[in-house]
Length: 113
Image 1 (cartoon, rainbow, N blue to C red):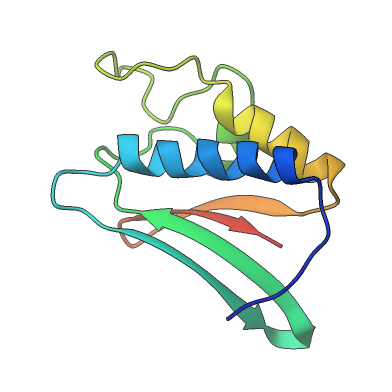
Image 2 (image 1 turned 45 degrees about the vertical axis):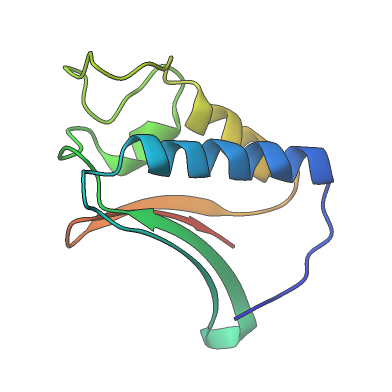
């Protein structure tokens, strides 16, 4: 699927860079990353980045948008501050997008509407 939406290019590049970097960093060996857009009922356009994560996420998905929160608090082998998704959420909100994180059937999904 495809759709057009006007938004600040630099801000969207920051969002995509963060989400793709996270997917690459946190996908298990031999795992998968999918990136796609689709239409949903009532003409809503959705963009999704999903991956098969290295570890189970030990916090509620909605908490991952908060600053300094990581999916697995005990993980020490990965660098990062826990600010990336918070920045992404802030940018998306400022641009008028809605977003959510969903974890289901072994997939970590970031959904942008």
